[in-house]
Image 1 (cartoon, rainbow, N blue to C red):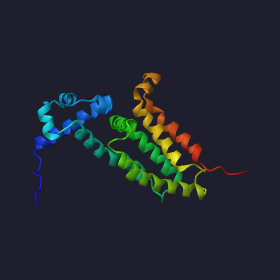
Image 2: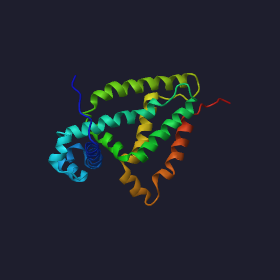
Image 3: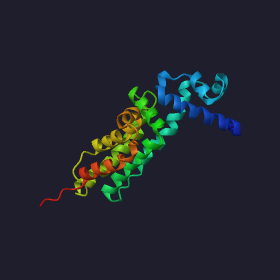
Image 4: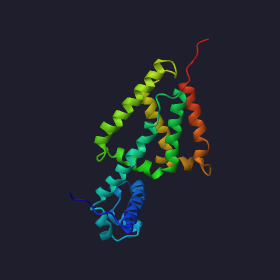
Length: 206
């Protein structure tokens, strides 16, 4: 049985450097605007050396997306149907916002892929992502039916959380241009918490 040889320390280091550099380049310029030469230069490697590890720009991009998808879906997977509904949803909002703060390049990489029509991850969106969103939407719908949260369209609730949390990463330049020296994340957590708490708290009739 054939097995691949274990990568050396230098090989692991170079591969990691390529992916780190590619994340910078792709998140700033998108897939179409990025070039192998730019990625190689950012990684501190020659183009032939880079192509030893990845045969094409597409291969680098695919490796980044493959590594990102599990990370990107993890916050929604963590929404626990046995937990307290409002706190579970608010925790999901906080996790998504924290990802925007800690992983802005990854967020822009994902957004660029979607804007281009998801040519490389379309199949995953219609299978893994859809299955996960379907499952969590059923949980949210059940919570609403039980009166544990206010009536809400579960899919559009999830869409709104994606939009409001990822905006801070995907439109970082615009956000910071408007706010000036203020850190966007100083007030965003409290604002989103208040917004969704008011939206989702059941209204008790007098």
